Length: 257
Image (cartoon, rainbow, N blue to C red):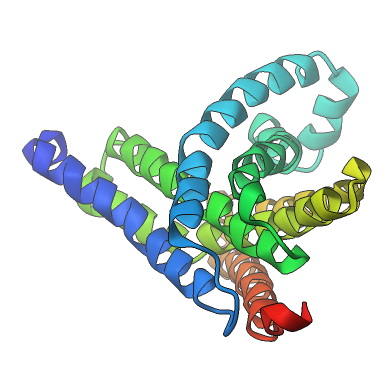
């Protein structure tokens, strides 16, 4: 199994697995509207921006943000009283939502030239979020290979779990961000995106809160509590992406938008 983990063929399989479902979800989201579907070249470009540029931006900003927050003793004390691993909790509940939603928003700007309505922003936001999620899936899967006892099969399980949970979250939260970006572009009011960014951050933080609680409960050998928290996270993500798709399905024809 160790040889398999170091095999370039397995790494290729891992790459395909990480990107397969996000790309299928991209087809699902892009094809949801009955009218005025977005052009594939721009949709795929936005996915690529999310997968590459948004990830790079998120890494840089996360490092800077963590350095700043690490000097706040009151913040660290607050999380230490509530979570078993306060550093991880700060990263998941504060840094990741604020930084990643902004970074994915940058990726969504690749769709600006084709944006003619607010709902177009849902598609491009989701595309950027799915690209980001695909790369994140791959990173987490590669990290899992380094954990003793996980191995290749475990890394594929990581991809599968994330593909049915955090991938939906990234797509839906950034779709909200994309909707706000489209409104700001079409209205000429840059600040119009801010309320939607706040909603996207709140969605991300809520999902990460449930996920963090699930990990905490698992560490405390509370299987039931861990399962309930994880199901809450997944339910939030599934409901959110369903609402986004419903909005796209109900979109009117281009002549009436």
